[in-house]
Image (cartoon, rainbow, N blue to C red; front, side):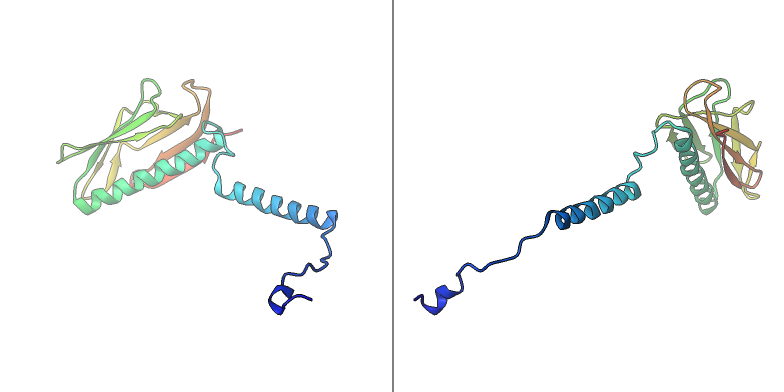
Amino acid sequence: MLPPFFALFRFRQFSAFTLVEVLSVLVILGILTASMGVLFSSSWIAPTSPAGAVRHGEHLGAWLESKILESRLRGEGFLLSLPSASPRNSLRISWNFRSLTETWEGRGYFFRAIGVPQSRFSLPLGTFTPTFTLDILTEKKASALGARITVSLYGKITVRDMEP
């Protein structure tokens, strides 16, 4: 006979899980893990793929829009240097009144603006002169077009997928 305290530690018979129950729980956890991986990972799209070029173009468009807003808030225009002769992997903004230059990096993509070496965003009208279309290339070749950004006179930015 055991004292009451030790009676708690007596072994009881537990029914074990069946193999089917264990496997079904593992399958459900695997499905949940895979779906979370797809949601939170950007590595499913290759960094220099055409689909990634569209996403990169959207980020570039958002960056340009933030620079337009900053220009209006500061009351200062800027000059956007575009790669027109040969594709480059960066764009550069030079502010009018400050000796400040900002750069947008391509991160594996190249940019080309046909025939337009630079565009100026000027105030008080808030216009780009000249307007431009910027090609986003997945390689440094002209045939590797992934996306196209069009910037209108008043700074409306449109990103299009050029995948056939």
